[in-house]
Length: 542
Image (cartoon, rainbow, N blue to C red; front, side):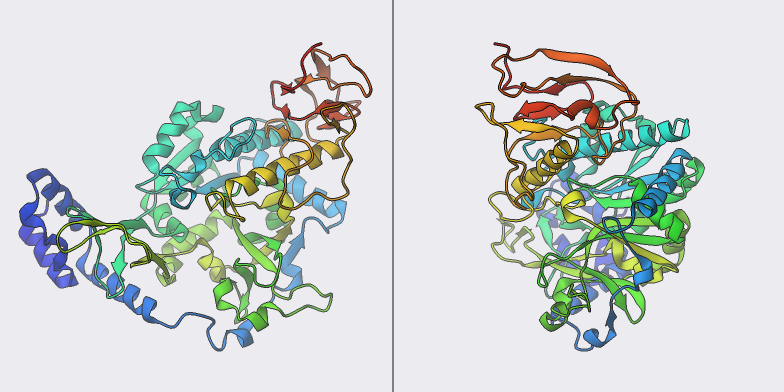
């Protein structure tokens, strides 16, 4: 272990000697821990990190003055539209995606390095429950979607296949995440196919370029952003692991989107048939000023431009059909070939420029007292996963419906946007739509039919609560084929009696998908349809 003298000399070269100012007050064990942490910080890199952080924070914020002239929408030929494409085109995309999955060429990679601080919890976001009737966490929903897409691909192609799940964590989330997965038996996935690894941490810095101490014996560290993925892939030899497994295509996504479709065969197939080395799912912006990055071109290369960098005048521009000219909202849902990721880790990662995040960072003052600031006092430097788009040789984007594929969980209640309530409503409303399309009818407390609304409110509860397990339906389509299921039979219209739960073999020759369970049947809320049974707790036998 490095000595105190060595560490002091290194800190002096970096201009950060203040990090040992409480040395005389520390006991032997905290001294050793602090020396071990500081020894990992290379003096030149630390000095450069602090300089860049202070300079970046001092620069004027807002749109670069010449950005508007350099912006262009993505070329139409590089954009697919899942909801507007003809059925045959969408079928081709989906079939190609399933084919690649069946060949064990597809992996998913979860970005899960952040904590649930904005949600008001101290544990990783993936462990959060948004209040579903099933009480499932984000991690469980995602694991079950992996299991289901493996099953669907295997059934279509007569094989057993695996979609490996790579989970990028941080020092703060690795332990709790690994323990949570073990406690839940990896949600019935093979543990050998769940690979967890850590991203790097960077010191938080004051506005004048000094590293922050969060305790007398500990530096304030923060994950290096989701763009830290590329260093982490190299640090932990993840691409080598993918190569051993035969993985060629990687679906990368953020943990907080409750509607995310892991290893989505439509998206995978679209990108593969486009010959893309890099791709992104996008949603149409809800309104010009929506605080979401825009996928577009800058100087002819694909890029995500943050909403704060686009002037109000540019955000308002319209295309010839009346839609927003820059309407491709980024949802952190990406496709990469393994070859592209290899090129990024070996050649392009050093060219990525960190972004400034001004945060409230707890610190110890000159007297050694812990201070929890009420306003931002520090800088965390982050890289973004999408910053590599500009290195792509063949970029493609797939526009999907927001109500089907994007509802992030970011804010604690009672926030109006991106909260547990809005995430829960998005999933339950989606499942209610699926049930109606499959021919189900819902009854009120008096046994009368609930009206089938032509459109559901975007930010409200559906008329009836319906939750469908990912193990029953991946995306609401007719995908079940042959299956044995248990379902609570609904109440016959106008009848007074209640019927017992019934079980029967499902015949694919007569019905497909959710129709097997739901077509022509009536249910009272709440309905929970999972792989074992569909429960109607309010239905009691009379």
